[in-house]
Image 1 (cartoon, helix red, strand yellow):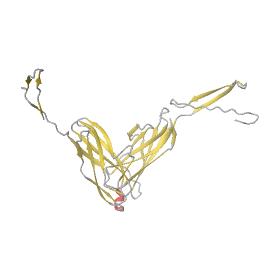
Image 2 (image 1 turned 180 degrees about the vertical axis):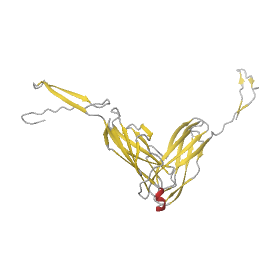
Image 3 (image 1 turned 120 degrees about the vertical axis):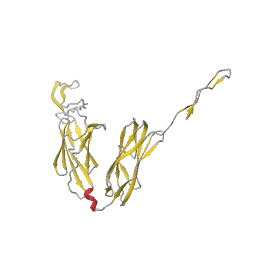
Image 4 (image 1 turned 135 degrees about the vertical axis):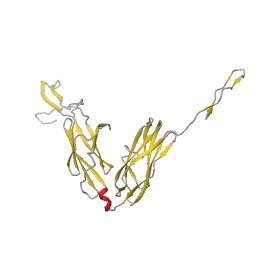
Length: 294
């Protein structure tokens, strides 16, 4: 492209003696890389696919799309939609996109790829990858299934415990390449702990225990534990929900200061025995002695 600066006055005198200047507009440079996926899986199996984009230049508002053939269905689309926003890239920055997908029921070899596009419609497409979907039991020993079992409910301030179980496609217990990485996600969807291997202990082939001491100030509500297991160089995940309840309130020292009807005065001591600020709803119930009526 070229440009130059010229000027004219109100009398129509024109000065355009300035020289032309050139500048180059080119597509920013980025490279799709490091797609991680299972090369084989059974029909109707949940698999995890990740891909990276290595940006050499600045990129603006990049979206990543996993292009899958008909028959695949996307799971957990709120967190990992087929087309997801990755955001802006700084120069020489790498970002990762992740998808959870169910394989088709029909056995075949399927081809997929990942497309990245920025706000200016610059596009980068990764190379085609193949996944074999088959019931062939000779490949089942290479399959990996992860199951997280955890306490359903704990009180804030107590220990949270979980067990991560890993099996192959034949049902045999198998060890991971390394200790599973654990993340704890709070009721607001924020990662409160991890990813970490702290607190993870191998208690037997294919079995890992996890223990985490919670604080009394931890938020009450529905939490998630997310386990990321690597086996044979591939990543497999599972998650489970559990509930954290805040410490109890103590109700004590109920006393009647004035027992005359219409001017009853009753006092009670309410104590929050937990470590976090909480609202309390108090309901008074008075029972007539002569009729036991409430």
